[in-house]
Image 1 (cartoon, rainbow, N blue to C red):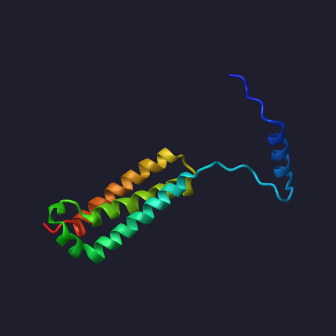
Image 2: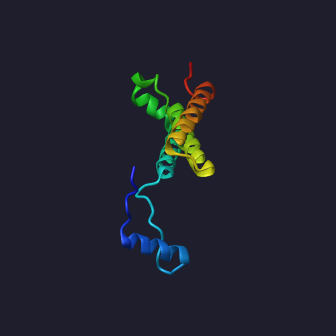
Image 3: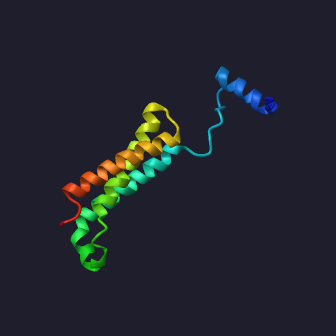
Length: 121
C-alpha cells in the first residue's frame, strides 16, 4: 500500500515541534480513552456512596426493585472505570485492553460487593 503524503504545513509543524519552537505543540487526538474510564469510575463512586447513604430510603420508595442493588452496580462501575484507566494509563495499552481489564475488575468488585453489602437475603 503506498504511503499517503502529508500536507507541507504538517511537515513544517512537526519539524518545528521537534526543534522546540515556542508556541507550537504536536497535534493531539480528538478524544482520549482514559477520560471515559475516569467518568465511569466517578459515576460509580457517586452511585456507591448514594446507595449506601440513602439505600433504605430509596428501597422504601420502590420495593419492586429489590433485585437491583445500587451498591453492586456502583461497585461494578467504579472498578470498571478504575481498572480500565489503570490498564491504559500505566501500561500504555489500547482501549480494548482497558475494556477487558475493566470488565474483569468490575465483575470481581460487583461480586465482592454483593457478598459483603449487597442484597440483604
